[in-house]
Length: 78
Image (cartoon, rainbow, N blue to C red; front, side, top):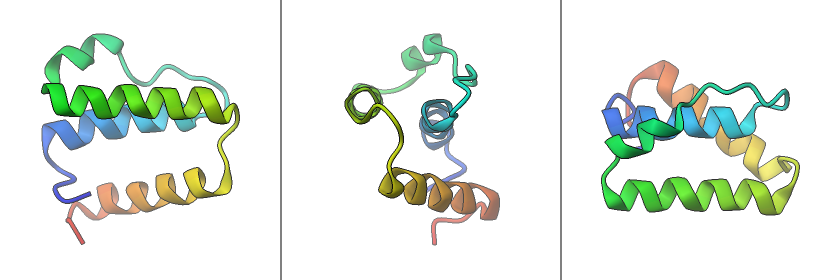
């Protein structure tokens, strides 16, 4: 959320939007994980594990995705 226009932020956002898509559309190429630094890759794997554990997105997940959508659209870190 701090720098929504950074490449790392946009890659993670693409993964989050893919995980949040109820139709299961593939918006994120897993090959893009190579473009992330180790810390961001760990975060990506943890996000995938969270979605696998939840099964279906819960209200907190939906609110977080909506907040990220707004930040990306606004293009700022606020």
